[in-house]
Length: 326
Image 1: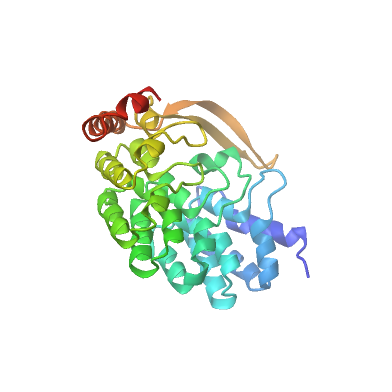
Image 2: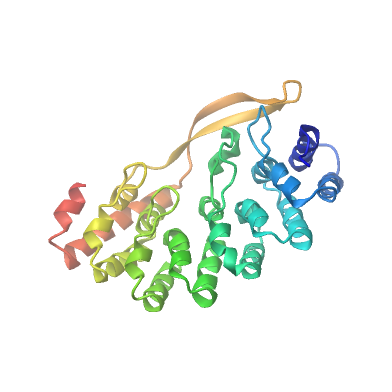
């Protein structure tokens, strides 16, 4: 039997919680988790999926989106635990899995992958709500767990997942999903070398794999100012005879890896909003551009661009003019 909108709304508001300033936050959180558990205990797996998919008619966000917006680790952990204990269904977990990316303990993500190795593709490719209002901030909508890890600079989670796949689930298709995100890692060099050794016949495919916005590991390494990773990736691309095609590859916004490294200091549109309980909506108080990148990070990207051109000039001088122009 399908759930009525009343129950869906109750679950949504239970996950959203109350905006309070005077009460003891521990008491408020305990009451919130109790409400969430009470609703979960009354429904079956099909109804649970309905709760996850239901969007607030005004805010256009799901209950799980609200957990992400408020970075409510305890609520997400409670939902995951309920699924594991009562309905160990990979489809349900793949719906929740992207939201586990902001949980401080990376053990939660690894635990789910270890418990359902045959569903690893679905888990890693599961996405957050497609719409996601602007006030979800830098996360937006339609994000995978790895997208969120990258935006939160959660390098430990990306490294842990990549290392787990190399050591335990050596599947080139799975590595193709994770590899682009490793471009931001300090450990990218050792991971890339491990992948080249582990998958010698599929290394070209893995090196050419892209994230949800068509960025390769080289794109992300350049965007992160990760000079050492860029040098390692250029060497690997040359070994696989795909150096020129990959350095000229463009992401969904039309940028090459080099253009990302040479871009101006990053800014984002910052919206300051206030909850208006009478209108059941958010009111915009202020909106403006703000810098989201430190001067040091900007300089690191510029140095990465110079290092990239210097490497190509030295090891592939016949390619440098074409790459530099584009």
